[in-house]
Each structure stands twice: as C-alpha cells, then as structure tokens.
Image (cartoon, rainbow, N blue to C red):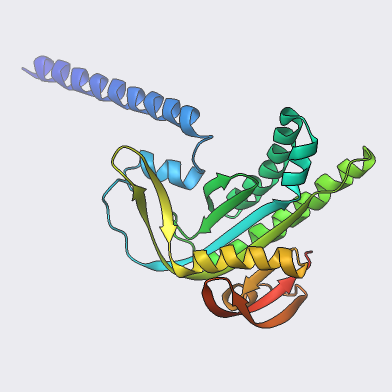
Length: 242
C-alpha cells in the first residue's frame, strides 16, 4: 500500500511540475510576443489576472504626462518616410525609457506624441513625483540625443510636455471586440492642454500645482491662472528643463 501511495504521489508531483513548467513557458511566450505592445506594468497585470475587461477599479490619485515632438510635421513633409519614421522612433525610445524607469505605463503612442500614466495599474506612493521624474529624464535624454545630432550636423529635437495630477479611474474603454486599457479623469485633460500651452509659451514643460510641489529644486516660472482651451483656468508653472 505504501509503495502504491508513493507512486501516486510521485505521479501527481511530476504532473504538477510539468504543468508549472508549461505555465511558465506560456507566460514567457506571451511576454515576448506582447512585451513591445503594452508597458511592463500592464503586461504584468494582464498575466496575473489583475487587469480584466469589466473589472471595476476605485478612483485613485494618478499623474499624467503628455509629450510631443515639435516640428515633426514639417520634417515629415521634407523627408523620406523612412527617415521621418527613424526620427520619431528616436524620440519614442527616449520617452518610453523615461516613463518605464519611473514605473509609468504608456497609454498610447499617437502620431508624434505620447501619453503616460503614473499610479496605475501598479499603485505608486507618489504618482506626481514619478511623473516629474519621468519628464526630467525625458528632457535629459533628448539633450543627450541632441548632443549626438549636433556632432553629425543635424538639427536638434524639441519637445513639449504637459504634466498634471488628480483623481481618475482606470479601466477598459472600447467595445468587446476592441478596447484599450486607459485612465479617465480631468487631470488627463489638463495635462493635454498644458502640453499645448508649453508650445505656445515657449517652455519645454508646463505643469499643474500638484506636480509643481514635487519639482524639488527645479527652477520654475509661475504662470498664474492659465486659461485652457475648453477648460476652467488652472494654476500653472513653466519649466525650461534641467
């Protein structure tokens, strides 16, 4: 009887080990296949079952970063498509690395700009501080890239950034056939509008008060109550970068 029970136990253990191995292989295969399409925090949430269509999430404090590459439309008009794509990808490489370094996720890459969210799906103690840190890294990365471009006699890249923080909710937006994991809240609208103001006012970044509190020793210029397109005025601060 003991021998029979031992045989059954070993068979069950072996099957469990094989199932665990198969699960790890499937997980790794999915990570390799989709790792470039979604940010690491989102991919981990999907694989762990924490991100599912229809699951409601509580409202939480999030921070948003909008950044775009200035002058890309004119460059595209004067350049071959492959050259224009290469330029955009150099910008994206810097932006994506900066966002992921501070545990944010890329909501989307749109044309010549990006939208990033901090504080979801991975909760952060200081989403506003993470967003500012990502903006700082992004601008430093662009400066480094411009140093290399200058050596080759190429024109520098210029970016504009909008930063805001506030209450928002994360979840799936779309239809059962096609949806996107995103964050919805007024702070996202504010960050988008502040990005537009950065371009208009000649700053590399414009941020709301909630982000300004996390800027540390960065030299900011008060812009007062800034009228935003389609939105109530917001106390804003301009930043010319590190």
